[in-house]
Amino acid sequence: MATHASQPETPAPGDSYVQSFARGLQVIRSFSANAPHQTLSEVAAGSGLTRAGARRILLTLQTLGYVVTDGKLFTLTPRILDLGFAYLSSMPIWNRAEPVMEALVQQVQESCSAAVLDATDIVYVLRVPTKKIMHINLGVGSRLPAYCTSLGRLLLADLDDDEVRARLEASSIEALTRHTISDIDALMA
Image (cartoon, rainbow, N blue to C red; front, side, top):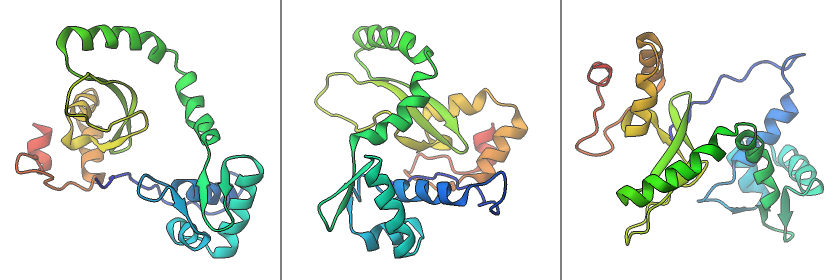
């Protein structure tokens, strides 16, 4: 499934913007479930950098323990999770929510999720799956468009109308199923 992450405009380098750090994050984001092991050329293409620039960043990430290589392919290491864990551990509400969500899953025999809005998407920060034959692969960090998910609509509904409309207008709205509402006015209603 394609993500609909909105990419902020890249500011010009200056005192409030460190271009090399931004490029390092581009390299990290080039890895995905579809591209977990990449050559230098693939990382450069996926991050929009030159091979030389991508190489320097990959070697830095390797020195810091965030990337390993077999000489040809680069792969993220579990250490990369430290970056995301900093967010989760800085918000102890998720620790308190988990036992409540587990009890709810036991009671209703359905999965339970917690997510936050990030621009036009929701990002799952906690998920307690149910034990069923059919399993949906949505874990912590999964990102889905807010406009077409029940959890996303719930989070959008908590915003004022102008903010909701702005986020919907910034979304890449498309009918993902025959039931997807893809009209902004209908979504606002």
